[in-house]
Length: 67
Image (cartoon, rainbow, N blue to C red):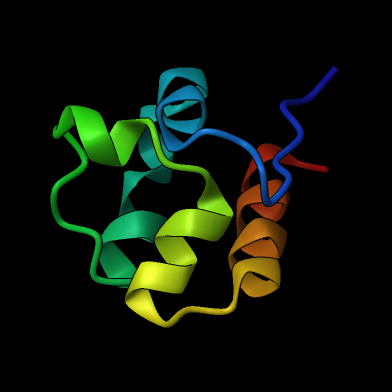
């Protein structure tokens, strides 16, 4: 079963599942991926801070994971 990303998925869990997802976060301006606070945020929280559409990012990440 492939990893499924939702808006409430924790960023650290996504990165742990596949480090190759880091560019998706870097692309949105989230350059502090190693920071414990950023790894503990949900996709929705991070998108809100960075002015990004959470649904769009979830779609990209799920496409990456093959969902």
